[in-house]
Picture 1 (cartoon, one colour):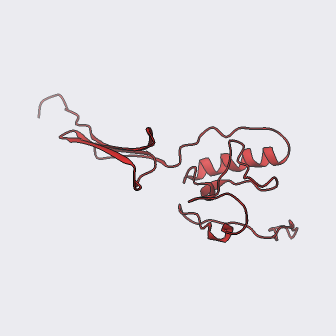
Picture 2 (cartoon, rainbow, N blue to C red; picture 1 turned 30 degrees about the vertical axis):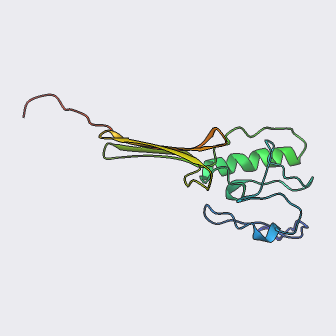
Picture 3 (cartoon, helix red, strand yellow; picture 1 turned 120 degrees about the vertical axis):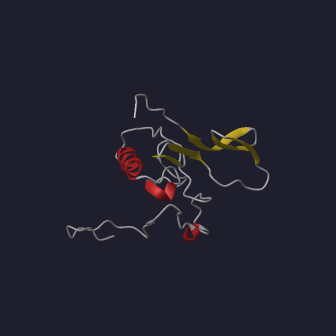
Length: 152
């Protein structure tokens, strides 16, 4: 791999990801553990002793600040400084737009065999995805109404 400063790092290939869906098919016959994303442990190490993952390819978080922190943790571990990455929610996002607050954490689409619990009322919509007795995804959409006091 050739770096901007002209130096190079010897490697067989680099996994690069643009967007939130890692392209991991090239790992199919490599022996490197993957599912929808590169499988990493709490140190961001793969099952191969010299390969670590950070950013979208790990499926841990699709936002830049988390990817930067993952890069730090993976780099420290590669350098021998044992460091744990603790922010392991795969997907998380919050939006507050015109008194409508939306929160997603974990998986957003259920798979076959998952239990989906949905509750909906005039205040909002709530969905849980449950797999093997554990919550693996949450989607909340809540309406917060504010009442202004005073006279018009």
